[in-house]
Image 1 (cartoon, one colour):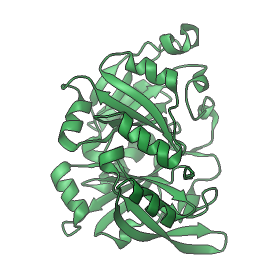
Image 2 (cartoon, rainbow, N blue to C red):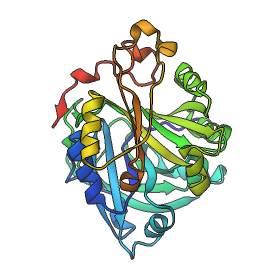
Image 3 (tube, helix red, strand yellow):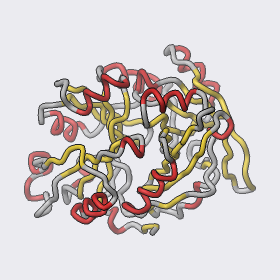
Length: 332
């Protein structure tokens, strides 16, 4: 029986300067620093750890110290990167058995503080070595999947969004094989292909074979490069399967680009997709700005892909509806 996951708890990235990552996101996107959020990494490595809220995502930036062991070696040898995606599961030891049957080992065990109605409690955590299969390690926390929260997560009130970005759209990965990660996710978590028309539209552009698959509430955009000269192919050659970029919508692309430029941030790639072929030309806003992949991996551990809301009927084509995200409360 497939294992049920919670919604995404947080994304962890290894960076050279956690303070710079948080400052950049705050100045460009009005992201909120989360000073009370707890972390399982405190018990397993020597590191500076900072948290920030962006859209509906909590990002954990881990800055390993020189004596930080495995994480410091990863940073030194491979550069900044997304290390893991974290979710809650009801029974962690069952997951240990499930992954062992797939040949996947535990990378590390630790504990993390959870917020409850009566105070803080500690829960067991396992980080599973799924990077070579999925493109990221999977951090699983034992807790009630519908209600457990990492201590400090209550800083986001209700349905409010952090900063000025949309909820998460996609986590985009470079892979050499689409069947292996999708098959593993299907067997263990009952994941399936989603946003099929969207994926087919993107794949028709020619440079990447693309599949969208869900992991809990997250849409993973698996991209297999068709040529050797793209940034996806270069990342794959350098690190193996890995997260290339994370995608959000912005309210005003020209304003966003101006702020990024003042921060010395450049585009990795700028392009204009003909979304009318996907959603119908009558549903595409006038004067839609070009889409951008912003070169932020050296500072954040991932690039950012940014686009304006590209269709009035966007919810017909995405897994997580958010056509009304502009009207949602925002934390400044």
